[in-house]
Length: 334
Image 1 (cartoon, rainbow, N blue to C red):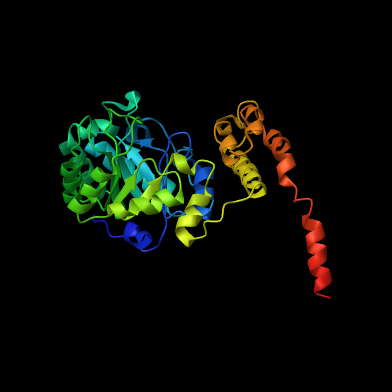
Image 2: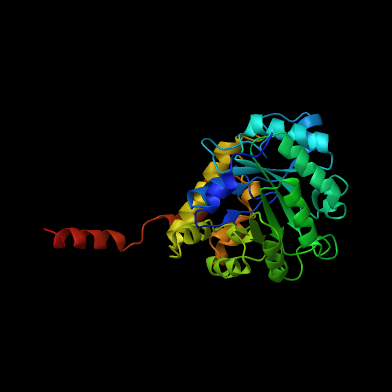
């Protein structure tokens, strides 16, 4: 089959940024909040192709399962065997209704080595075969997310090979695999990639604000991908999609943190103890309220939605002067 959906081209015709795939973070609740704020698209946490095909996974797999009504979500797969990737694409498309498929070539985590991820930067010809196999299994756009190289910068060579293999889009994180997340992302290297291929290039690395994202567009990328800078801050996508850079007040931040908790409970349901656990959000919730550090000790210990609501209660109520202001406005209109 050929890639005929042009999902990426349609979305890149709009202003905005992309939510990065982040293991343990970019799950359905976070994707929903980012999408509501105007993210161009979101990317799932990476999913093992072998797990989908041979590991007994099902359509209930939370890494791939969409939230109700989810659109503009790209499913990211990792693997190193063309036939397995092709089968995984077919299964992911049937089970998870993605808008596009992405090949992970950037994860530097040791447990992934030899099974895909950044290892493919050492054998790019394998990656090209994987992209070709994925394209042959779907009519959806197929893309790839890479780093600059394994331990040296080979990004232009690799990106050109991926484009020739049929990748509709390439995302470049401006570090080598050996760097992991140390040092600074090399946006000059990303710019060289963007100038070297005809397909759109998305730039990634060290973007923590709308201002930084706008500045990084000067590298010639089609858009910017935001990862850690979007944790507890979905409003960064609103700023880039609409130009509305108004900082949310503490009440909006607290209400969104609580909504994140409720979305989490609704999506995952009860755990073995019979309650929706908030443990996975302990690392996320304090980032919604960075100017209230006194909340951190409480938020990193929450177990239930009720715990979250109690912790945030002082910030959820309307400002004490809001009622008086509304009364004054009403009186002046009489």
